[in-house]
Length: 635
Image 1 (cartoon, rainbow, N blue to C red):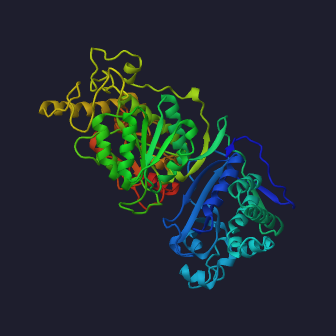
Image 2: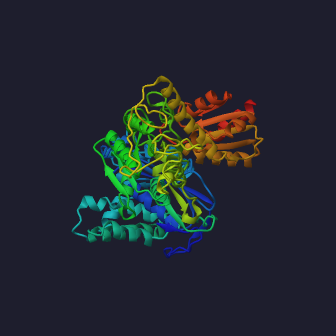
Image 3: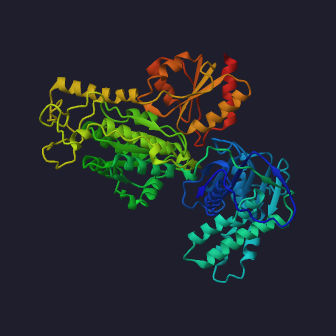
């Protein structure tokens, strides 16, 4: 959904006079059964919030089961959005408004509601059977346990069915399933959101089923009008548009950011994008997204398994395309030996790892950032690979372009670490102009395309650029540049198979030095806050938003703290060592048991402390602020 922060929005006409209170920031959470359409509800509210010009951040939180038992605690799906009139970086710690569709959603999400927050309840679903499934001994709507909140009980299911009872072509069950749009209409009224964009989406989504277009649109309007006329809320709220940098904005998820970045890298490099993957949560959406861009020459391939996918991508690179594969943790393990083949053949390859929680199948729909050490060392022998990490949905765009730039310039596989929290989260992204994106350096491939051949005589596939140590990249079949490559050790320069001990030692060191030299080609990390701060928090990946917000608020409270967030994890930026040694105290906050901290301590011998939690949930701002205070007090 296109948007602009200063755009004028169409808003529904309110029938009665109500007090409109202006607030700067709000967090809303929707929760219900996995069949209640929670993600659709949250996604559509996100789109109209973007149109209203607010800054926003979202957090979809859903179960792994495609359809857990209805009303059960494991089957609860949630969606949280924070929106504001200023720049924000997280979906919020706790919600001011919690919309719940059944008792199980209440039990699992009540701890996400702020004290005195508003709880909007579908009262129809608090039946004895559903209360038992949620393991309630008494009805929380009646037993006084919700006294600390403002509870708004609405019979959403029965009102929904009543609103469309004349649509005889729709079954009773399908009528009930429209109740998420009733709730969406209520929340749209509460925050003065336009209904027209949602109705357009409904018409597009259900274009082959006019009866569902009518049903969902009518229920949406009914929910809005119900909130307007029943006087359940004495105050509605206005959140002014955010003052963001001028430009055209688009509401994107991290997956969309990855896709746009890869498309841009393809256009900038002149290389055809070939994406090969095997379905795995949460990486599969990238295959779905890229498959829609065939008109840009994108080739997508769903392989029979992870190993086939990565080898197909390597084959595409060998043939002169930009070979890319995507996966999640277990898939990265299966791809490891093929990544080694790309290391040995020295072909460009992008491996996008959407991290999820736990070993094996673990918690496949929960977030974590615990694949760093595997990306660093999870391959036999000496196998250095550059690693980059994405910090947010919009950052995904820039990171994959940077990863592709490194891959083709240095002729190496590159691993991009992102995670579930990032790829499913959404935020406004300022659309970039092509002229603002630096051109690609194609490395030694230019030797061939310019018809120069080899600088010093006959072509050799493992001769190297003096600055980057990258070898030439030649499309197979190019006359005069016939050569062969493979997984066996290569002789220096000529590239023939070699078992010479001294040659192997030299080639191992050359491959390591090639990756190490990338450190000269990346910027120094930005220090947010004072360079003389008493406490420096170092992070990577999706912890950016909570850390940045915690540091911003702590600085406003007068605390001496700063932040460094790393995009390049291997090699680390050259300037990082000095930054770490200058800081009186270093705290590394990461959603694992201390993987980056271990690397920093090993490389720089700095006494870095760690803040680590691995619950499958992103950090909150408040817990990080408490940690900041604790470490500053310890000094």
